[in-house]
Image (tube, rainbow, N blue to C red):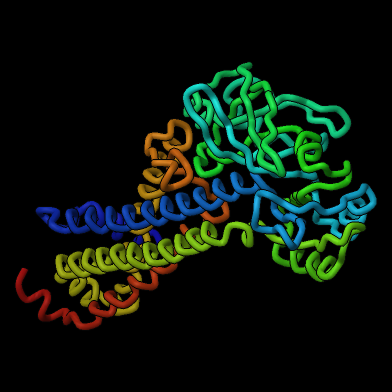
Length: 415
């Protein structure tokens, strides 16, 4: 192993030739593998970041699973379902993967000021509302403590709507609701959030659940539905299927039929787009491995041709073709390792800079986020490196067979 390492190192540095002619080929091969690995790592990080950020935002505005009325599952002007404490306890007991359950009610509304008006959706929330998502994106003010027993005339809206309607924190705004007649409610702005998810920032207003129930003349047990979050390691598809099997064709006390939907069912277009991104990553992976592989093969062939006389000398001294091939395969592993180190450092630097400073921005109206998100687990990072190393080494085996075609007498004839 010591002489193989010594000879590989000498070839890498171009020290075995007077002019060091192999060194440029070595550097090009090294950069090829570094560039390919960095692109693969960053592509996976970007796609994972997009998927996670969009899922987090969708779940923040909704949940992993929703149970609503079957007759109004696709409208903001909903029909109610009857929800009691016993129903919530039954769901938690039957499905241990459930982490939280919260009631909600939605109703279309119109925001009107002296200079503008804007349609929106008022989302009523109760005391069990988990405000952690909106607190992470809160720009000003607070998230109020909603109650289902007393009326709270407080509202939280997005920075996008506040700017568009020229509203500020602590301003009073009028919300108009159309039922059998037009009803107006004056609410105080106590919080302004900004998730960067423009499609939803321009839509949702957070209000008291009791307000929506009073507007719809609902009982305290009547709500638009339940939002159910699952534990992080839960198999969402299995849980949803089991819930559907449990609650399909089941009616509440007032004849409302339960309808179970997952977050993927509620937003099929977005998840279809995210699935297409996975295909893009696979294409990029194969393209980059192909580019890196061709570069490495070309570099190794140049190195072999540059050292034809040395190979002939090794054979004349008694080294077998297998031993010489192993020498150059060791050189390939050395080059690949060096290139992978450079690729990891380069990708890691971009990953760190982007996550902390968000240098690469996006139009949230098109991409749903205002910067390029990057997220990748240590396991994924390690798996990509291991797979790249194995594939690259396997690719390098083929060009080493050229060594067996070199004749010592011919290669050493001209020195």
